[in-house]
Image 1 (spheres, rainbow, N blue to C red):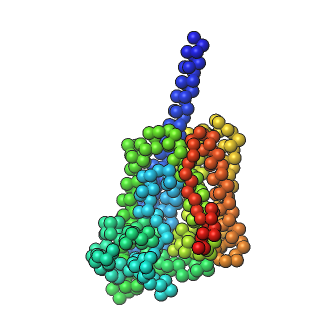
Image 2: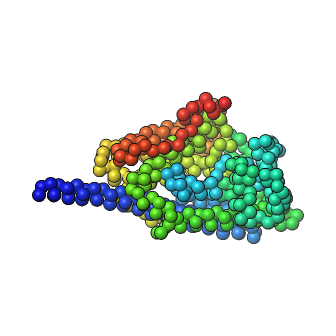
Image 3: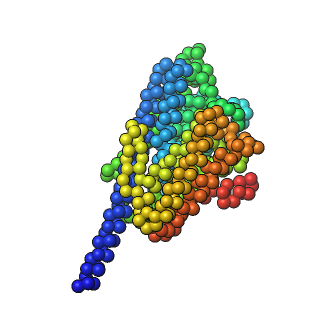
Length: 417
């Protein structure tokens, strides 16, 4: 009889553990749905601001469109922690957030930008001026700049990743223009007259520039709506993460670890500092990189804690990875939370400094000890929290996960080869 009861209690414990895992995964999916819904809402607000700019191209309306773009980045950057572990997000992400881009593909650039190269024959193709392009040796009709043309023909044309024609950064370039300040203060300074009619038009072909901007924002909205649907009830991304508890938890930790280490600490922060190159900024045209880094970090933290504050101030929260870790090793949970907080303080210091006038591109200047200290504070925090993330994986019995690496962290000499 004792054996029967013992077996029943083990079964109950195992069932309870599975229920706990399912609750964590459900909350993870709920938070994803909320983040992508917020991304859709803010992208629609951006689209409305773009409509107003095109209808009346004033500096006031251009500033409003820029403000809407900046607001749209806040929820989207917090979704990036859903990359790496979720194939459906990785396969899609390049449509909306690919960077860096060869902006000469899209519009006019400064003479210092250079010309076409063997690496990218379309580096200065300027589709806004040219209604015909040669893509893979074939003449392409670019008369009508539509969302379909951008997505199916121009994006990554000639199979070159830098030919980014869609998403946030293409829109950013069309709103700000090139940032020609190097590591000095200042963002891009595109005039509103780049969208004006008739003789008031600057930069040539203002009607095509407006068509491009409108097509890109329409496409951004539809791409985000598609992803939001994948995380809603009945969506494929939700189903994928819920179908296997171990695989689902591994996806969460893979996303946290890869964004922390190889992507953000390495490719987005350490690499640019090593090269002292503002072209390596994530939001380089708008000088919004400090916010990009901050909200990426916040996305990692809120997934671990299982709580996300929406743009309307409401909160989506529930069972979390933190709960699972605390049940197995309370000290490790304290350590993980402490490191996430330390990272957010370091990223917050970058944000505060940038908003006070010490912009991120200024921090990248060679020999700028203060800038290097700020950026490396963020890098070190992200690297350190990744070590604890790996301990969490072991504690939860998830086996090995593949964390994205970066030469800037793993093999620095290779960066200069």
